[in-house]
Length: 261
Length: 357
Image (cartoon, rainbow over the protein chains, first blue to last red):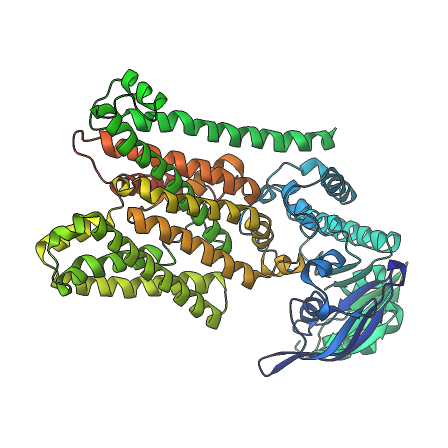
């Protein structure tokens, strides 16, 4: 049944007061697809992810998952299907790594973790290679490790949809690559639907199956990276001039702003 | 290898929690054996072994069964309830220094008691000694509880209007506390000397007010507290990862804050209506528990129960023996303990971390 899982966003509109943060957002994602959300600050990437995560309620439009309206599912049921990683993680108390990851089992347990739960927690930690940190306090681990812990938490949740808000923004180059590689691998192997907002155009170019380019709450373009991330679109959305280099891989180079000189 | 470490990890914690609960037994015994009146240990043991008493007339029997045992049970339960209520409020506000007292519960109780002690007696033209009678005391308790209950409803309504953010919970509580404090100032200005004294006594929480009849109320509160631990531990863990993550894990932060604030305020209201406000247990006990067991609420809340019980019972032992034969109200002791606790906490802050494991 899950192999037919499909996410369908239809004509979604979100408002903060009178400000329209999202409007006329429409797209479809199939399982196994890694989608990158790109756009300047304030384009509505976080808002879109939060809407799919049911943290925000659309004023207009419907989101269907597997043919069901997500707003009509119950909280626990939806938590088993969807994992959400916020951009800023504001933990109030420093728990141990194992405890943080075990929170992924929250939708499944009432009080005691079963043996099966514990195995899933460990395998999630192994997947993101944080098992050696299990009994360390989350406040003692590095930024890269911390983000891998958070991703392990989501994997332990066993969702079908991964919603990741800037998962690699503050990480160094190696972790940026490793984490995105990992997410792409998991997405393909487990036939997940993954939507990730990214800041780096080139990371999107390299890892995403599809790119959604957003501007001012609207979808500006959607499609394969090489179709969407062309200099004209980048100029229009990010307001910078870019050149597409191609050695050894397609690569976007942002040109210097020479106007002010 | 690592997988095997998990059961050990929880085993160690369960062992730790069990030993804390076991520690309650010697502490309780100490609390029964020690007091203003010197009883030989052998007499105490004899009394404990004969609950029906071969000779109930002897003074040891009366002291043990009618003063010290209810008082000890009162200390144990009150400590447990206050500690868990503190941990719960800290969980929903994500603030290690918050407590039901931050929500204004104790100010509400004091105001309720003040209404009866200062204004009520005067208006009803009753003699001041009426307050010393069991009926008089019952009326004070009821008034304190009623105001607390109304206060809880009011604060929840305020939060309902303004949204249940941690900041709004704390602000609403503080604002309400100022209102009660204004009311109390007003009452105090018009109070006579004797009723003022009576009122001052009441607001220093004291466990001598617990007798067998009130223990049923305390027991009911304890049951609600234990239920709260079971119901909210996982949800509060989810909340500690942030509101958005909690939501994505199937926990509605608004509903959770509402339910927890209601339950914690009500249990606190019940115990402090009986004993009078006992400060700092709500903050100290969860903090000590966090140092011992970590922040996972499934362990933190039960540990808080044990620590709260032990802490308040020991405070009460100190209150009874420090200035023998004068018995201090336990609130005076927890106040002093709380102040020194905060100073030591402040001195031990490393790199700005207050809540560490």
